[in-house]
Length: 115
Image 1 (tube, one colour):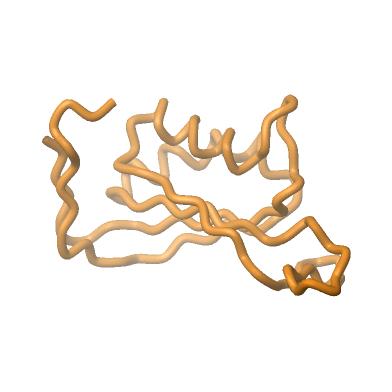
Image 2 (cartoon, rainbow, N blue to C red):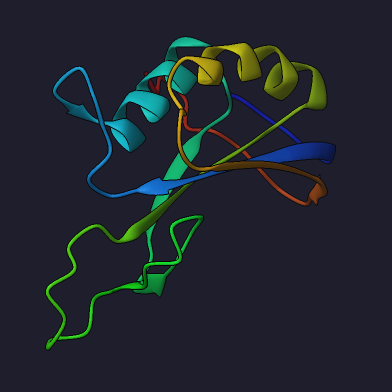
């Protein structure tokens, strides 16, 4: 059973839903690499509206034709493990935003036999 409590680091990677890495969605590649690296977990959140460096607004509103919505991949683990993972993102994220935030984990208990 995996446990994580106390001080931690939150890694957030903001990319476009349509960003691809070798025929796979970029967000999916990030999640798979995080798993391979043994990080505590990763979640992907799809935005409903946003803009980035291009200043183009992407939205999920019905009348909009935009499909490239913002996607956030969020990973929380110890600072050491998150920082060790950062070089793996260098080759993947050529456009987007990567942020780190100190956080406190109140409760994280992984499932037994997960994997």
